[in-house]
Image: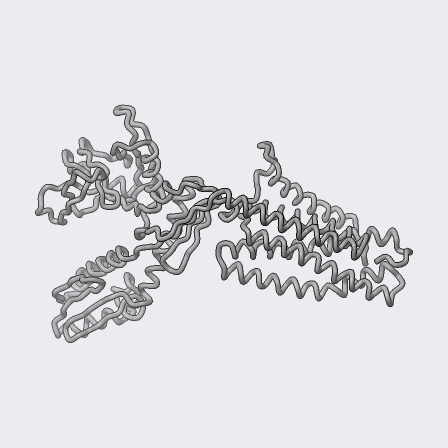
Length: 517
């Protein structure tokens, strides 16, 4: 029946008032709001920067192959199997095996239970392809191995890019995968992307290595330039510490030199290793290297056992802040190259907002006028319900601090249309019931009940489409699917609770009146 208990009336009223109150946050500019939440505008509405980054996986592949080369050398030496001419050329590892060990080597690579497989599971079929030409063995990444490596690099890059951008405090960044080697970054409200580009363009691979003027260093040496691009030094290839041992990094002012420095704190393993290295190398220069360039190379004056230190290099406070951020967020697994960038100006964003709002207002006004002319009092009830439905939808989006885009506005407009459609179905069904039923209350109640199946079918199929768009789409498509999906639930709530409540009040008071609709 059309009867609503007091508890249900209170529940419906509370839901409506609560979400209307939440939605009002978008119109209030005061700092004294009880709930500090609002809808954020997307890149196409607010303006901002768009960056498409491509991951260069070549260094990752080379590093993995170098690790595999070391593993193969050590592993077969421990097994007593002699291999020769172990080289890494291009993207292939090659080595020769004496005839007496040939089958043993093949078994080690192909046997899933081999002890080598904890490092590289299912060597032949999973990550690597093994080619045997007489006594020559060649090992290279399989297609599946390359795909898995790219996916892994992309996942790591996505997380680190997100950390770096979050550290800056950019509002509602949109960071998404593109293919298996690209990352899309959308930064609403950011007009100058130069700092972001600088931060994302650095791999932030930090190492501590000793300066060595002895070319006979057992670990080998290499010549590296300082950041100024002029000076250079020979440094040992032996890595004392890496960025993985860093717990924290912060910009500081050195009270003695009045210079901006980056202070860092090491984890337990790093502190122990750093203390041991500095205690036995007092008087030597320790190079601090970031992405292949020497930032500074201070002389070790005393043992550093505290697990903390500082990096100096003529920093400004801004550059020290950025370096600290890079070190805290961790090193990227591979370099990122910016292959596309766009800046959307705020004027374009405002034009988009105005166009969307005008479309919404015109569409909403035409619907309200049509419904009122068609159904009179019940048209007024429908219009009140539509407005409350829209406010509840905005309230839910505000509560979750959703990002609104142009497709999202389209989803809201579509929600209004679907809400009207549901009410039209109900009222037309009520007209049919009134032809056979003289009792207005029974006719109206039957109209709501018998139209329910058609309304649910229409909304559920639309909801399924919205869910598919959400999981299969990205960016603006997701924005459309979110507003459409939430709009379906608010529509069903407004039709079967708000509109039905208002209808029941009117019909109950005018139950003996003829031609109610």
